[in-house]
Length: 442
Image (cartoon, helix red, strand yellow):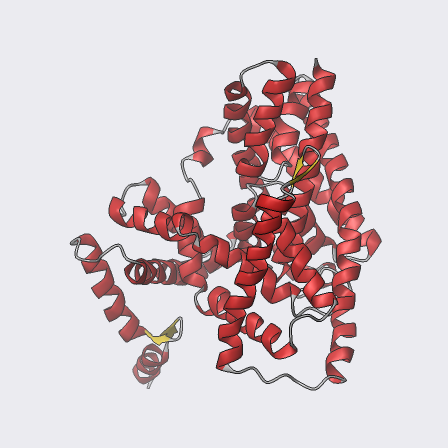
């Protein structure tokens, strides 16, 4: 009888919706074709490989003791194990290049991020959307102040000059990532101080990656705290406390929208059109306001919000966009996780920036931004843990890619729109602040 139960369990078990015995056969075929070099580097081949690697990693992470409860489970393993495979050079170079080409060159990452933002911003209750965005700014500012205090405390304990901590640790950590943060900040540093920008950038980038690592770790810790104390966190889709009750009341008085396959297909075009308008403004019409650079992602949030508030998109098409977003980030999530690990996570950077002083000071900054935004979030009506992750930790990483990693690991991808506007506009604010800080250092 016992053997029969085990056999039934085995035959019924599924991996990402596929019966285990079929998935094992499929995975074997794909992996054999990879290590014999038979698999091509086209998009279909790349997606198949990423799906297999991501699914296997995800299943391992779900079952590995300690890891599955305290380190992020299947999601984190699906990100970190592929990154480790690249670091150890166990994955053939041709397929690493095809993954990078898929995510970076033709930029699947851009579609991924834009779908996350569009799916959430176009369908969220518009009153809740306005209330949330209006309160994000003060929460971010408090986070910056407390993060700076954390850095100063770290400077006092380690004996590091305070101006050095502010310039090389605090500002790059909160600057919106590498391309929109550390790179232009190094140019500002050279322009004001006359010191070659490479000297600033090399250290700033290493410490930014250290802060990004701590942000991920702290995010996972906060997620687990939220599981033990549910009143501190929401369902991962809203920042405002009690918003789910208000939204439920609205939904009860609203006729459900029937979504067709055509609506879902239109969701891709709608997302692309909003992105096109965002690029027109971000690259041609208004790329900067004074010295502050405005990234197209920030414009995307603005235009998607406008479309929601003024109901420019028919409900069926908005819900179609949401359905398409769920397909990419839900049904294909393991493929996306593996791609993130291979193309966005540099496993070697975890080692290169490690020193006791760097580890401690960046930890103090990350804890500061998390504590500051959690407290401020509580005061303005946010769930404190969600505020700490979205308005705090997502502003203390490597920008858009860092947002994806943290929100994925903490199961809060629905908050991508809020995280994006904060990390982009907040990062622009930090760039402007860096001009003042570097001048005062002279």
